[in-house]
Length: 482
Image (cartoon, helix red, strand yellow):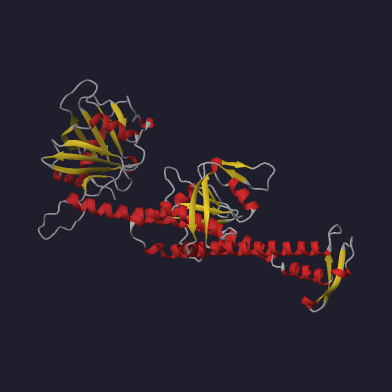
């Protein structure tokens, strides 16, 4: 409920701001204005709220922060009324219109007396700035249709003093006073609306976080289902190893040029196995091909299982966050959670990327495990300012740290990525290794080389001793992923 005329009258009677100097002007959002005023050694913040259902004018104890981008009306007021003095404040008749007259120590035709007209009319609230001749200089909400635009004349409604308006009787709402019976109505109003607005803000933040988590969960569950299907398709790789062993065990029976070899499969109750052969290869080479296929499929399954585990960890964390959301009352904590989700939205990668995805603080770390994943991450998921890491002298996966605008990569994140580079390389068993790193823009593709092969320039070196705690926080669910 907005202030009624009687309540506005009481608030103005309590304000001691005539003669006060306007020192600071802030527009914290798209419906409020705060002016810091100074009088007799005391600073106060005068709040004007145009929010529907909560229109009011009062001294507030709440600290309002600036918006990232200075608003048009805020800029105008700073240039026009900063360092002005409030010479008069009054309510016009029985209407919810307040007139604040301002003047500077010096007056000229371009910047003399200024009047703030504050209209607290619920759905039609506004702050209109005029000169002494009622010519509109600027308004909080520009309304050309109502002729509330720069250069137009501002008119007070004709019925502000008529008898019908005078007959309306408004009641000042009951408010609790303290033991000394000294709490002003202004303080009661400030506390009342501040708590209401905090409740509204809390509810709004929770709804936004809830929507983002549900959307993220939907994407993650789709990725989980896809990976589950891929695992089912790749789980027949043991037969490839068996075929290789059967070929080696019966190689004396295989003739050069054979395209197929039939034999009893003692791994499967001596059932007959029909094994395809490459007619141009020897039995040993055919067996080696089956062993390679076996290792590749086994590795693919291991990678898929690891990726699925990573996704399940994230799903579990988000579901717990969703459950606990109702118990979080701190607005600053809710803002922090929302900001973290927004930061992750800035990255354009999908929730499921080639390879593995981890988080080190606010930074994304992407890991490719195969030549194809390395190549795809490099071509589609990185930009020039991202960082590339690779174990020196060992084959292995590419590790990328996604850059964040205006933020440098902290040492902790670099060490995290370095550990992953060694862990996902052939040098893992040695427990340590050298890692070189550079920005993606300093990578050059190697001509006539295997897919994903690059030549780094301007690289730096990082000596890494594998840290079990770092690896565990990524691979054993100790890292809370958002």
